[in-house]
Length: 465
Image (tube, rainbow, N blue to C red; front, side, top):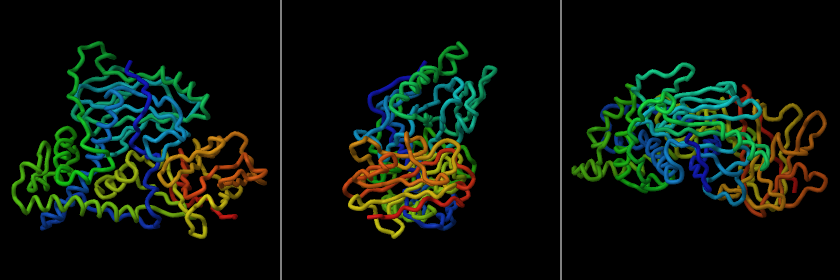
């Protein structure tokens, strides 16, 4: 049984708990960029394409390497407690779910996830490829919470699975398995941990009682944080070469794209910073890092939809051949769920367009019949400018459909009071704010069609003082 707990859990996947909704508001989507570069591009243009194309893979590799420093590879690790004001490891933490994480390296053999029947709470295991595609799910939505075993297999695996085990074919040998379990309160964490003791992740050889495969090579040490990829300069392409040697693309079109970068010394196992001596090519590779960053940043500024000041996106999780959109999400929402599983929305200012500040009082108003349409849960979380929780006298960092004592108005309308001081007579609906700037983030898990097609109107936030 390969399940562990550790004192601190690096979910440097901010998971996306924040998602691409963190980009600035616009109703237009980023224009897809062809995966294969256009003919006759200059070396700098081609190198910039290579940076954008390879950016998600390098971010993933650094994230997996960072996680592997805290939890063993191919082990399932549960977060020990709900996030609180002292949680500073990952930006935009949440108190809705407890995480279970396993960085997987299938170069040795497949691994088998076995779950009991779970129907008393929402949960999900998300499988994220090295290229950031959310390619498979097990959980409340995807498998109905049924008991079962799932074997995660690497590309090119042609073995036979025992009867009753469902195959999940990973497009890359390295991937992240990320679990989320809904928790009602701190006392509920114990029940999730009890449930976790019934969940196993083990090599296929343990299930079939055969000779174990050799242990994969160490996953390596990250050259920097997932957020500081551009600081590597030309050595970015060295990291890309190392990641490609382990996780080459399997899609023919993507393989052709990668082949087009070979003239610049880019490819599996290649280190352009030391092996490319042509000054023109080296200059192109160096310039491509800053140019690629600008391209990703500019696209991110137009990648979301706005409703009543709430900015969100429903074009994440799978990307086909849109290299630019993939890179945008890798930068500002690595690990994003597909919209069918969860949608995230952010609000940085009131209906007048003024940025939130605790010197004022605000009301988030939901009309009757206009609460977030979800099958699992919704919540609104308040963050300070640094994207972490803000200390407050009642230790409340989020409010939502599971908040004890929440008071509704006539017909089911709802007002949430966001302010520094307690609202007299409305303390049950109070989301405490700091004395200075802050922003709001809404999570909608298992959203209904209105959220997915953009017709749901998010609540109005009005400044009342």
